[in-house]
Length: 82
Image (cartoon, rainbow, N blue to C red):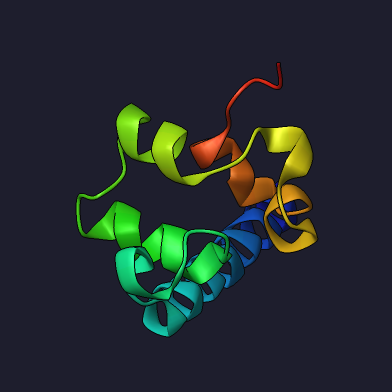
């Protein structure tokens, strides 16, 4: 059980590091585009993401670029396909 918990902690640390890297790579999507995952993460961190911003700037989820669609992080930005 202890090894499992340690493995979980290490996996979480890797995900957090990956998130920090994406955030650092991101730029303001109003200038650099909304269809790149780092820019979406940057926008979230800087308070730019709300329902209106997503509706106005992202296509339906079925039309997302592969980088966003294949990322487990896309759940934070998910919209139902219509």
